[in-house]
Image (cartoon, rainbow, N blue to C red):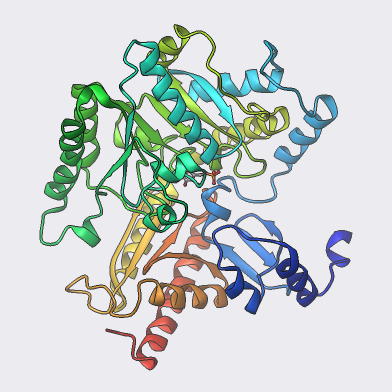
Length: 463
Ligand SMILES: *Cc1c(COP(=O)(O)O)cnc(C)c1O
Protein backbone atom coordinates (compact mmCIF):
# COMPACT_ATOMS: atom_id res chain seq x y z
CA UNK A 1 0.00 0.00 0.00
CA UNK A 2 1.41 3.40 -0.96
CA UNK A 3 0.06 4.87 2.27
CA UNK A 4 2.35 2.50 4.14
CA UNK A 5 5.38 3.32 2.04
CA UNK A 6 4.91 7.00 2.79
CA UNK A 7 4.81 6.59 6.57
CA UNK A 8 7.16 8.84 8.49
CA UNK A 9 9.68 7.13 10.82
CA UNK A 10 8.31 5.61 14.03
CA UNK A 11 10.00 8.16 16.26
CA UNK A 12 8.32 11.02 14.42
CA UNK A 13 4.91 9.37 14.66
CA UNK A 14 5.41 8.76 18.37
CA UNK A 15 6.52 12.31 18.97
CA UNK A 16 3.45 13.74 17.21
CA UNK A 17 1.20 11.31 19.04
CA UNK A 18 2.69 12.38 22.35
CA UNK A 19 2.30 16.05 21.44
CA UNK A 20 -1.39 15.97 20.50
CA UNK A 21 -3.19 12.72 21.24
CA UNK A 22 -4.69 11.97 24.63
CA UNK A 23 -5.13 8.18 24.90
CA UNK A 24 -8.03 6.48 26.70
CA UNK A 25 -7.29 4.66 29.98
CA UNK A 26 -3.66 5.79 29.84
CA UNK A 27 -1.11 7.42 32.13
CA UNK A 28 -0.09 10.09 29.62
CA UNK A 29 3.20 11.05 31.27
CA UNK A 30 4.29 7.42 31.47
CA UNK A 31 3.27 6.67 27.87
CA UNK A 32 4.92 9.74 26.41
CA UNK A 33 8.19 8.95 28.17
CA UNK A 34 8.50 5.74 26.16
CA UNK A 35 6.31 6.35 23.06
CA UNK A 36 3.24 4.46 21.85
CA UNK A 37 3.47 1.35 19.71
CA UNK A 38 2.29 2.36 16.24
CA UNK A 39 0.06 -0.27 14.67
CA UNK A 40 -0.14 0.24 10.94
CA UNK A 41 -1.96 -2.72 9.43
CA UNK A 42 -3.55 -6.07 10.15
CA UNK A 43 -4.61 -9.25 8.44
CA UNK A 44 -6.38 -12.32 9.78
CA UNK A 45 -5.28 -12.66 13.40
CA UNK A 46 -2.04 -10.68 12.96
CA UNK A 47 -1.08 -7.05 13.57
CA UNK A 48 1.95 -5.24 12.16
CA UNK A 49 3.65 -2.19 13.68
CA UNK A 50 5.58 0.68 12.14
CA UNK A 51 8.88 -1.12 12.74
CA UNK A 52 7.72 -4.11 10.75
CA UNK A 53 7.19 -6.32 13.81
CA UNK A 54 4.35 -8.83 13.64
CA UNK A 55 2.06 -9.79 16.55
CA UNK A 56 -0.55 -12.43 17.03
CA UNK A 57 -3.51 -10.39 18.29
CA UNK A 58 -4.67 -12.41 21.28
CA UNK A 59 -7.19 -9.68 22.17
CA UNK A 60 -8.99 -9.30 18.81
CA UNK A 61 -8.36 -5.56 19.08
CA UNK A 62 -10.39 -4.83 22.21
CA UNK A 63 -12.44 -8.04 22.30
CA UNK A 64 -14.14 -7.05 19.08
CA UNK A 65 -12.57 -8.24 15.81
CA UNK A 66 -14.50 -11.52 15.84
CA UNK A 67 -14.20 -12.26 12.10
CA UNK A 68 -10.54 -11.24 11.97
CA UNK A 69 -8.88 -8.42 10.06
CA UNK A 70 -8.92 -7.79 6.33
CA UNK A 71 -12.49 -8.77 5.40
CA UNK A 72 -13.12 -7.22 2.01
CA UNK A 73 -16.84 -8.01 2.13
CA UNK A 74 -17.32 -5.61 5.05
CA UNK A 75 -15.30 -2.86 3.41
CA UNK A 76 -17.24 -3.22 0.16
CA UNK A 77 -20.61 -3.18 1.94
CA UNK A 78 -19.59 0.01 3.76
CA UNK A 79 -18.42 1.64 0.56
CA UNK A 80 -21.58 0.74 -1.34
CA UNK A 81 -23.67 2.18 1.48
CA UNK A 82 -21.58 5.35 1.58
CA UNK A 83 -22.21 5.87 -2.10
CA UNK A 84 -25.94 5.27 -1.79
CA UNK A 85 -26.80 6.96 1.51
CA UNK A 86 -23.89 7.84 3.79
CA UNK A 87 -26.09 9.20 6.54
CA UNK A 88 -29.64 9.69 7.52
CA UNK A 89 -31.27 9.76 10.92
CA UNK A 90 -34.12 7.66 12.26
CA UNK A 91 -35.64 10.29 14.56
CA UNK A 92 -38.34 11.96 12.50
CA UNK A 93 -40.49 8.99 11.54
CA UNK A 94 -37.95 7.98 8.92
CA UNK A 95 -35.96 4.82 8.41
CA UNK A 96 -33.63 3.29 5.82
CA UNK A 97 -32.95 -0.16 4.36
CA UNK A 98 -29.72 -1.05 6.26
CA UNK A 99 -31.23 -0.38 9.70
CA UNK A 100 -34.32 -2.41 8.79
CA UNK A 101 -32.25 -5.33 7.56
CA UNK A 102 -29.93 -5.30 10.55
CA UNK A 103 -32.82 -5.09 13.03
CA UNK A 104 -34.48 -8.07 11.42
CA UNK A 105 -31.25 -10.08 11.33
CA UNK A 106 -30.30 -9.32 14.93
CA UNK A 107 -33.67 -10.23 16.35
CA UNK A 108 -33.66 -13.48 14.38
CA UNK A 109 -30.35 -14.41 16.05
CA UNK A 110 -31.45 -13.27 19.52
CA UNK A 111 -33.53 -15.53 21.80
CA UNK A 112 -37.19 -15.89 20.69
CA UNK A 113 -38.63 -13.49 23.29
CA UNK A 114 -36.46 -10.67 21.92
CA UNK A 115 -37.80 -8.97 18.80
CA UNK A 116 -36.69 -5.33 18.98
CA UNK A 117 -33.47 -3.37 18.96
CA UNK A 118 -32.51 0.21 19.87
CA UNK A 119 -29.24 1.38 18.29
CA UNK A 120 -26.36 3.36 19.77
CA UNK A 121 -22.81 4.18 18.78
CA UNK A 122 -20.86 2.39 21.51
CA UNK A 123 -21.29 -0.07 24.35
CA UNK A 124 -21.16 2.76 26.89
CA UNK A 125 -23.91 4.63 25.10
CA UNK A 126 -25.99 1.48 24.85
CA UNK A 127 -25.73 1.04 28.62
CA UNK A 128 -26.83 4.65 29.05
CA UNK A 129 -29.84 3.61 27.00
CA UNK A 130 -30.35 0.64 29.33
CA UNK A 131 -30.19 2.98 32.33
CA UNK A 132 -32.86 5.30 30.99
CA UNK A 133 -34.95 2.55 29.43
CA UNK A 134 -35.42 0.43 32.56
CA UNK A 135 -36.43 3.45 34.62
CA UNK A 136 -38.79 4.72 31.94
CA UNK A 137 -40.27 1.23 31.57
CA UNK A 138 -41.25 0.97 35.22
CA UNK A 139 -42.56 4.55 35.26
CA UNK A 140 -44.72 3.75 32.25
CA UNK A 141 -46.12 0.76 34.13
CA UNK A 142 -47.12 3.07 36.99
CA UNK A 143 -44.17 2.15 39.22
CA UNK A 144 -41.96 5.26 38.99
CA UNK A 145 -40.35 4.41 42.33
CA UNK A 146 -38.68 1.32 40.81
CA UNK A 147 -35.45 3.19 40.01
CA UNK A 148 -32.44 1.49 41.58
CA UNK A 149 -30.15 -0.54 39.34
CA UNK A 150 -27.91 -3.17 40.90
CA UNK A 151 -24.57 -3.95 39.26
CA UNK A 152 -21.51 -5.86 40.42
CA UNK A 153 -18.17 -4.93 41.92
CA UNK A 154 -15.46 -5.16 39.26
CA UNK A 155 -18.09 -5.32 36.50
CA UNK A 156 -17.41 -3.24 33.38
CA UNK A 157 -20.16 -1.55 31.40
CA UNK A 158 -18.29 1.31 29.76
CA UNK A 159 -16.90 4.71 30.58
CA UNK A 160 -19.67 7.32 30.40
CA UNK A 161 -21.17 8.62 33.65
CA UNK A 162 -24.02 6.10 33.65
CA UNK A 163 -21.92 3.18 32.39
CA UNK A 164 -19.12 3.87 34.89
CA UNK A 165 -21.74 3.99 37.63
CA UNK A 166 -23.29 0.69 36.58
CA UNK A 167 -19.82 -0.83 36.48
CA UNK A 168 -18.01 -1.65 39.67
CA UNK A 169 -14.49 -0.42 39.04
CA UNK A 170 -13.46 1.48 42.17
CA UNK A 171 -10.55 3.26 40.48
CA UNK A 172 -12.99 4.68 37.92
CA UNK A 173 -15.53 5.62 40.61
CA UNK A 174 -12.91 7.58 42.51
CA UNK A 175 -12.41 9.96 39.59
CA UNK A 176 -15.38 12.31 39.53
CA UNK A 177 -17.49 11.19 42.45
CA UNK A 178 -19.23 8.16 40.98
CA UNK A 179 -21.41 6.15 41.06
CA UNK A 180 -24.37 8.46 40.66
CA UNK A 181 -27.24 7.91 43.13
CA UNK A 182 -29.56 5.01 42.50
CA UNK A 183 -26.92 2.41 41.67
CA UNK A 184 -25.59 -0.22 44.07
CA UNK A 185 -23.22 -3.18 43.62
CA UNK A 186 -22.97 -6.73 44.87
CA UNK A 187 -19.87 -8.94 44.93
CA UNK A 188 -18.64 -10.80 41.84
CA UNK A 189 -18.58 -14.60 41.44
CA UNK A 190 -14.76 -14.65 41.34
CA UNK A 191 -13.94 -18.03 42.85
CA UNK A 192 -10.17 -18.02 42.26
CA UNK A 193 -9.65 -14.69 44.00
CA UNK A 194 -12.41 -14.67 46.59
CA UNK A 195 -13.73 -18.20 47.00
CA UNK A 196 -11.20 -19.39 49.58
CA UNK A 197 -11.83 -23.00 50.57
CA UNK A 198 -15.42 -23.06 49.35
CA UNK A 199 -16.59 -25.40 46.65
CA UNK A 200 -16.99 -23.27 43.46
CA UNK A 201 -20.71 -24.05 43.05
CA UNK A 202 -21.43 -23.34 46.68
CA UNK A 203 -19.54 -20.06 46.28
CA UNK A 204 -21.49 -19.23 43.10
CA UNK A 205 -24.80 -19.70 44.93
CA UNK A 206 -23.63 -17.57 47.81
CA UNK A 207 -22.63 -14.72 45.50
CA UNK A 208 -25.89 -14.96 43.53
CA UNK A 209 -27.92 -14.81 46.74
CA UNK A 210 -26.32 -11.47 47.53
CA UNK A 211 -28.64 -10.15 44.84
CA UNK A 212 -31.66 -11.42 46.77
CA UNK A 213 -30.37 -9.84 49.96
CA UNK A 214 -29.66 -6.55 48.20
CA UNK A 215 -33.12 -6.39 46.63
CA UNK A 216 -34.68 -7.08 50.02
CA UNK A 217 -32.51 -4.45 51.70
CA UNK A 218 -33.54 -1.77 49.19
CA UNK A 219 -37.10 -3.02 48.76
CA UNK A 220 -38.36 -4.84 45.67
CA UNK A 221 -40.68 -1.91 44.90
CA UNK A 222 -37.61 0.32 44.46
CA UNK A 223 -35.39 -1.90 42.30
CA UNK A 224 -35.61 -1.62 38.51
CA UNK A 225 -32.96 -4.01 37.23
CA UNK A 226 -29.85 -6.07 37.73
CA UNK A 227 -27.08 -5.72 35.12
CA UNK A 228 -24.16 -8.10 34.62
CA UNK A 229 -21.85 -9.52 31.98
CA UNK A 230 -22.42 -13.27 31.47
CA UNK A 231 -18.61 -13.54 31.81
CA UNK A 232 -16.88 -10.46 33.26
CA UNK A 233 -14.36 -9.36 30.64
CA UNK A 234 -12.40 -6.27 31.59
CA UNK A 235 -12.62 -7.34 35.25
CA UNK A 236 -10.27 -10.22 34.41
CA UNK A 237 -12.30 -12.87 32.57
CA UNK A 238 -14.27 -13.99 35.59
CA UNK A 239 -16.05 -17.17 34.49
CA UNK A 240 -18.85 -17.79 36.99
CA UNK A 241 -19.42 -21.19 38.58
CA UNK A 242 -22.22 -23.12 36.82
CA UNK A 243 -24.51 -22.59 39.83
CA UNK A 244 -24.43 -18.80 39.50
CA UNK A 245 -26.64 -17.80 36.58
CA UNK A 246 -29.61 -20.11 37.23
CA UNK A 247 -29.82 -18.68 40.74
CA UNK A 248 -29.65 -15.09 39.45
CA UNK A 249 -32.42 -15.88 36.98
CA UNK A 250 -34.61 -17.36 39.75
CA UNK A 251 -34.11 -14.27 41.92
CA UNK A 252 -34.90 -11.80 39.12
CA UNK A 253 -38.04 -13.75 38.21
CA UNK A 254 -39.31 -14.09 41.77
CA UNK A 255 -38.66 -10.44 42.68
CA UNK A 256 -39.89 -8.98 39.39
CA UNK A 257 -36.58 -7.28 38.58
CA UNK A 258 -35.48 -6.77 34.99
CA UNK A 259 -32.41 -8.81 34.08
CA UNK A 260 -29.94 -7.02 31.81
CA UNK A 261 -27.18 -9.09 30.21
CA UNK A 262 -24.29 -6.94 29.02
CA UNK A 263 -23.33 -9.02 25.97
CA UNK A 264 -20.81 -6.51 24.62
CA UNK A 265 -18.00 -9.08 24.88
CA UNK A 266 -19.93 -12.36 25.13
CA UNK A 267 -22.20 -11.63 22.15
CA UNK A 268 -21.59 -12.81 18.59
CA UNK A 269 -19.92 -16.11 19.26
CA UNK A 270 -17.33 -15.39 21.93
CA UNK A 271 -18.60 -18.14 24.25
CA UNK A 272 -19.42 -20.64 21.49
CA UNK A 273 -23.08 -19.64 21.09
CA UNK A 274 -24.47 -16.46 19.58
CA UNK A 275 -24.85 -14.91 23.03
CA UNK A 276 -23.45 -15.57 26.48
CA UNK A 277 -27.07 -15.77 27.63
CA UNK A 278 -27.49 -18.83 25.36
CA UNK A 279 -24.39 -20.43 26.87
CA UNK A 280 -25.68 -19.92 30.42
CA UNK A 281 -29.34 -20.57 29.66
CA UNK A 282 -30.61 -17.23 30.89
CA UNK A 283 -33.52 -15.17 29.61
CA UNK A 284 -32.62 -11.49 29.89
CA UNK A 285 -35.14 -8.68 29.44
CA UNK A 286 -32.48 -6.52 27.77
CA UNK A 287 -29.14 -7.37 26.17
CA UNK A 288 -26.44 -4.77 25.50
CA UNK A 289 -24.50 -5.40 22.29
CA UNK A 290 -21.48 -3.68 20.67
CA UNK A 291 -17.92 -4.82 19.84
CA UNK A 292 -18.42 -8.08 17.87
CA UNK A 293 -21.63 -6.70 16.32
CA UNK A 294 -19.48 -5.13 13.59
CA UNK A 295 -16.24 -6.94 14.50
CA UNK A 296 -15.02 -3.43 15.25
CA UNK A 297 -14.93 -2.40 11.58
CA UNK A 298 -17.21 0.54 12.35
CA UNK A 299 -18.62 1.79 15.67
CA UNK A 300 -22.11 0.49 16.33
CA UNK A 301 -23.93 -0.83 19.39
CA UNK A 302 -27.44 -1.41 20.62
CA UNK A 303 -29.86 -2.77 23.17
CA UNK A 304 -31.84 -5.87 22.31
CA UNK A 305 -35.27 -5.44 23.85
CA UNK A 306 -37.62 -8.24 24.93
CA UNK A 307 -41.29 -8.25 24.02
CA UNK A 308 -42.19 -7.54 27.63
CA UNK A 309 -40.14 -4.33 27.76
CA UNK A 310 -41.02 -3.27 24.20
CA UNK A 311 -44.74 -3.63 24.98
CA UNK A 312 -44.33 -1.68 28.21
CA UNK A 313 -42.47 1.14 26.49
CA UNK A 314 -45.11 1.28 23.77
CA UNK A 315 -47.62 2.40 26.41
CA UNK A 316 -45.50 5.38 27.41
CA UNK A 317 -45.75 7.71 24.42
CA UNK A 318 -42.52 9.27 23.25
CA UNK A 319 -39.29 8.08 24.91
CA UNK A 320 -37.15 11.21 24.85
CA UNK A 321 -33.95 9.41 24.01
CA UNK A 322 -31.75 8.71 20.99
CA UNK A 323 -28.46 9.45 19.32
CA UNK A 324 -27.61 11.21 16.07
CA UNK A 325 -25.90 8.00 15.01
CA UNK A 326 -28.56 5.54 16.22
CA UNK A 327 -28.74 3.06 13.35
CA UNK A 328 -26.09 4.78 11.23
CA UNK A 329 -26.59 3.37 7.73
CA UNK A 330 -22.93 2.65 6.95
CA UNK A 331 -22.31 1.04 10.34
CA UNK A 332 -25.49 -1.01 9.90
CA UNK A 333 -24.35 -2.22 6.48
CA UNK A 334 -20.96 -3.23 7.91
CA UNK A 335 -22.57 -4.97 10.90
CA UNK A 336 -25.02 -6.84 8.69
CA UNK A 337 -22.21 -8.12 6.50
CA UNK A 338 -20.25 -9.11 9.60
CA UNK A 339 -23.22 -11.15 10.84
CA UNK A 340 -23.56 -12.76 7.43
CA UNK A 341 -19.91 -13.80 7.60
CA UNK A 342 -20.30 -15.18 11.12
CA UNK A 343 -23.35 -17.14 10.04
CA UNK A 344 -22.32 -18.07 6.49
CA UNK A 345 -18.92 -19.42 7.52
CA UNK A 346 -20.30 -21.22 10.56
CA UNK A 347 -17.86 -19.31 12.75
CA UNK A 348 -19.97 -19.50 15.92
CA UNK A 349 -20.37 -23.29 15.57
CA UNK A 350 -16.66 -23.43 14.79
CA UNK A 351 -15.89 -21.84 18.14
CA UNK A 352 -18.15 -24.32 19.91
CA UNK A 353 -17.07 -27.47 18.09
CA UNK A 354 -13.42 -26.82 17.21
CA UNK A 355 -11.61 -23.75 18.52
CA UNK A 356 -12.94 -23.65 22.10
CA UNK A 357 -12.25 -27.30 22.95
CA UNK A 358 -8.83 -27.05 21.29
CA UNK A 359 -7.92 -23.88 23.18
CA UNK A 360 -9.27 -25.34 26.45
CA UNK A 361 -6.98 -28.35 26.12
CA UNK A 362 -3.86 -26.33 25.29
CA UNK A 363 -4.63 -23.53 27.72
CA UNK A 364 -5.22 -25.83 30.66
CA UNK A 365 -1.70 -27.21 30.15
CA UNK A 366 -0.39 -23.72 30.97
CA UNK A 367 -1.87 -24.34 34.41
CA UNK A 368 1.16 -26.58 35.10
CA UNK A 369 3.55 -23.66 34.72
CA UNK A 370 5.16 -22.72 38.07
CA UNK A 371 3.88 -19.12 37.76
CA UNK A 372 0.23 -20.06 37.15
CA UNK A 373 -2.36 -20.54 39.88
CA UNK A 374 -5.27 -21.19 37.52
CA UNK A 375 -5.75 -21.43 33.75
CA UNK A 376 -9.42 -21.05 32.80
CA UNK A 377 -11.31 -20.61 29.54
CA UNK A 378 -14.83 -20.60 28.15
CA UNK A 379 -15.37 -20.40 24.42
CA UNK A 380 -12.59 -18.17 23.11
CA UNK A 381 -12.03 -16.10 26.20
CA UNK A 382 -9.42 -17.20 28.71
CA UNK A 383 -7.36 -16.15 31.70
CA UNK A 384 -4.18 -17.10 33.54
CA UNK A 385 -3.77 -16.22 37.22
CA UNK A 386 -0.15 -15.35 38.05
CA UNK A 387 0.94 -16.35 41.55
CA UNK A 388 4.12 -16.74 43.58
CA UNK A 389 2.53 -19.73 45.37
CA UNK A 390 0.35 -22.12 43.36
CA UNK A 391 -1.00 -24.17 46.25
CA UNK A 392 -2.19 -21.14 48.22
CA UNK A 393 -3.52 -19.19 45.16
CA UNK A 394 -1.57 -16.38 46.82
CA UNK A 395 -1.32 -12.83 45.49
CA UNK A 396 2.10 -11.20 45.06
CA UNK A 397 3.60 -9.07 47.81
CA UNK A 398 4.42 -6.38 45.21
CA UNK A 399 1.77 -3.86 44.15
CA UNK A 400 -1.04 -5.52 42.19
CA UNK A 401 -0.31 -5.47 38.47
CA UNK A 402 3.49 -5.45 38.80
CA UNK A 403 3.87 -9.08 37.76
CA UNK A 404 1.08 -8.75 35.20
CA UNK A 405 2.79 -5.82 33.50
CA UNK A 406 6.12 -7.66 33.41
CA UNK A 407 4.43 -10.63 31.80
CA UNK A 408 2.56 -8.46 29.29
CA UNK A 409 5.79 -6.80 28.15
CA UNK A 410 7.37 -10.22 27.58
CA UNK A 411 4.30 -11.20 25.55
CA UNK A 412 4.66 -8.13 23.33
CA UNK A 413 8.35 -8.85 22.86
CA UNK A 414 7.50 -12.45 21.92
CA UNK A 415 5.03 -11.18 19.32
CA UNK A 416 1.82 -11.82 21.24
CA UNK A 417 -0.80 -9.35 22.37
CA UNK A 418 -2.02 -10.61 25.72
CA UNK A 419 -3.49 -8.11 28.16
CA UNK A 420 -3.11 -8.00 31.93
CA UNK A 421 -5.76 -7.03 34.47
CA UNK A 422 -3.84 -6.76 37.71
CA UNK A 423 -1.92 -10.04 37.85
CA UNK A 424 -4.40 -11.88 35.65
CA UNK A 425 -3.39 -12.42 32.01
CA UNK A 426 -6.28 -12.51 29.55
CA UNK A 427 -6.93 -13.36 25.92
CA UNK A 428 -9.92 -13.02 23.61
CA UNK A 429 -8.61 -13.81 20.11
CA UNK A 430 -10.46 -13.46 16.80
CA UNK A 431 -13.01 -16.29 16.49
CA UNK A 432 -11.46 -17.38 13.20
CA UNK A 433 -8.17 -18.33 14.86
CA UNK A 434 -6.98 -21.68 13.46
CA UNK A 435 -5.67 -24.56 15.54
CA UNK A 436 -2.11 -23.91 14.42
CA UNK A 437 -2.50 -20.24 15.37
CA UNK A 438 -3.79 -21.40 18.77
CA UNK A 439 -0.62 -23.51 19.07
CA UNK A 440 1.44 -20.43 18.25
CA UNK A 441 -0.49 -18.33 20.79
CA UNK A 442 0.04 -20.88 23.56
CA UNK A 443 3.73 -21.39 22.70
CA UNK A 444 4.34 -17.64 22.78
CA UNK A 445 2.42 -17.33 26.04
CA UNK A 446 4.58 -20.06 27.56
CA UNK A 447 7.79 -18.37 26.39
CA UNK A 448 6.61 -15.11 27.93
CA UNK A 449 5.74 -16.88 31.20
CA UNK A 450 9.24 -18.40 31.36
CA UNK A 451 10.82 -14.99 30.79
CA UNK A 452 8.47 -13.34 33.30
CA UNK A 453 9.30 -16.00 35.89
CA UNK A 454 13.02 -15.43 35.38
CA UNK A 455 12.63 -11.67 35.68
CA UNK A 456 10.45 -11.93 38.79
CA UNK A 457 13.07 -14.18 40.40
CA UNK A 458 15.94 -11.90 39.39
CA UNK A 459 14.16 -8.85 40.82
CA UNK A 460 13.18 -10.71 44.00
CA UNK A 461 9.49 -10.24 43.23
CA UNK A 462 8.51 -13.92 43.36
CA UNK A 463 6.87 -13.66 46.75
C1 LIG B 1 -16.24 -2.61 26.11
C2 LIG B 1 -17.42 -2.83 26.97
C3 LIG B 1 -18.42 -1.86 27.13
C4 LIG B 1 -18.26 -0.46 26.60
O1 LIG B 1 -18.24 -0.41 25.23
P1 LIG B 1 -17.59 0.89 24.50
O2 LIG B 1 -17.91 0.64 23.06
O3 LIG B 1 -16.14 0.91 24.84
O4 LIG B 1 -18.29 2.08 25.05
C5 LIG B 1 -19.55 -2.19 27.83
N1 LIG B 1 -19.70 -3.41 28.37
C6 LIG B 1 -18.77 -4.36 28.25
C7 LIG B 1 -19.02 -5.71 28.84
C8 LIG B 1 -17.59 -4.11 27.57
O5 LIG B 1 -16.65 -5.04 27.48
